[in-house]
Image (spheres, protein in one colour):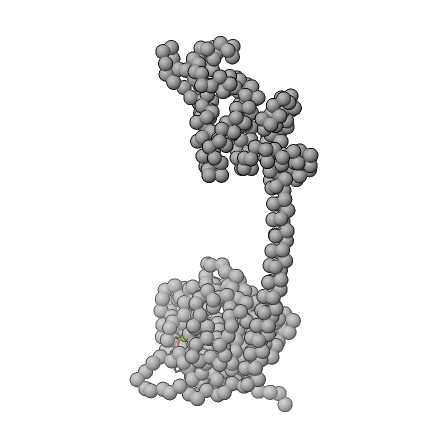
Length: 507
Ligand SMILES: Nc1ncnc2c1ncn2[C@@H]1O[C@H](COP(=O)(O)OP(=O)(O)O)[C@@H](O)[C@H]1O
Ligand SMILES: [Mg+2]
């Protein structure tokens, strides 16, 4: 004996369950034309045959199905059986498909973004799992224009379109419901195998109907505008029928309010096994989340330990670098004034190091600094620092000034050395030019101007033009004042002495 699979949707229509499997069904029409009722009737018929499904309900209209059927309403809001965790979308999808549990996803209380994210994860899992299981399953989506909008590309839209257009092989069917026919992706509508076209009035929607029906435009208009609530044009391949859809047997929460007082029905208690299954999914999710968190903490701890180690190494490098910087020749001169030749050799070395510092990445610089560090020099520098008692930062600053001046052209270095050695004596440009052996105009335009800019030389207007002298003392006071109170007055003197030696040695 064959099982009766006929579906009671309309007295005007003979439709079997088999025709629904893997089908893409579109239910269109303006608000109040009866779309949700039609969808509800189809869901009732499917549920009578224990057909597993998910209804994506963004207006909280379908919980009334519980009146007659074992449907689990999940999501958020007053009518749900279980408040769900938005993160558990994939697990819930898995349970529904694997255990053939019909679900109403009441997403009415979520923000659009949360809703879309949930749905994306939910449908992704349905799609991949259906590929393995290949069982009949249907997904109904209310207000579809929100999810598969014409002309806009989203991941969720592509997923729904894929299920609608290519789900058949996997047993997946879709029911697309929308009051904005013109705003629903045309590719999906034109590929739908079954249409329930309720009344529309807007020109844009009428144009969509004209594309879907093999009639003249005037005929389409004539038929469609005369449809009453619950009336629709049914299209299935060659079959085109004006039909009246029966009213829902179960409570229709989306009914148009009337003066009649309609009590919310006693909803059938949902099966405890279903609730338990979803609760287990939630728990499993929590456990796996806890596990993931633990792993994440371990990973971060390891990362921190590595970072600590790296910081220690860098500190070591920084210390080593500090000692290397003591190799600055001028400082050696200051400490060992009897060895100027050695100091000059070191000056070149420092310049090389300096240019390397500018062109090499920091890591490489550190590496080369480590490899060139000589313990003997380091020890000596430690002693030197003790001898002059200046803070390391001050020593570095002296070094950087020396290096800066060391990079100037020879005439500048010679002029500076001349003025520093004879300070506070003052000289005219002509005197300086004679000493250097060049025209006064030339030294005034470039070399002296550069020394003025460095603030190492100052000029005064006197009879016979500008006169120049060393500004080393005021320069040191100004340049090193930021190290106070770490350095005292007598140490300013020491810095001036060291700089004097360094800079004159550059000539
Ligand atoms: N076939 C029908 N027979 C009787 N009443 C219907 C029928 N279809 C819809 N209605 C009623 O019309 C109103 C609007 O129907 P609904 O399905 O909510 O429309 P839509 O979803 O298109 O906005 C509701 O009160 C509903 O009960
Ligand atoms: Mg509706």
